[in-house]
Length: 171
Image (cartoon, rainbow, N blue to C red; front, side, top):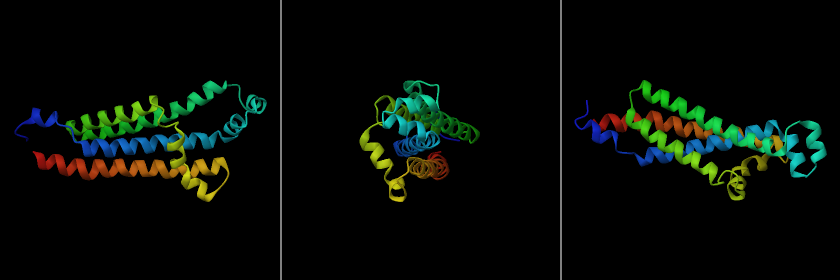
């Protein structure tokens, strides 16, 4: 049992917040790339400004179609955040839950700042798939799987290694 329980609950661990944020950001990029891979023909039509081809492949408007990409990213954030939260509640780690909330809010705020749609961040994220193929769907599948796996690995290491050792030592 901790001596100063209230004081420990209000202290944030910025190392965990940074690592969880990086993991969530990579998962967001990965989920979006997997969505783009599944809809690559429609994206290619939009990139080429071929709206006739786009309209024959779907009944959606281009705006709604592009909005769904952001919704996939948000869905990935939400799912991973819920899993992290449930794990931390199961382990009775309330302090770690506060860190995860801050991480989620930071990664979510980047959506509204345009970080995920910026040219520099997409060129960095897409480099791995471009080394292997020139086809959009192959590039996006490789990038989506790689970045999602890396993000999940970072979060798993953060939860398993840092949370369990640090918070037990503080008590």
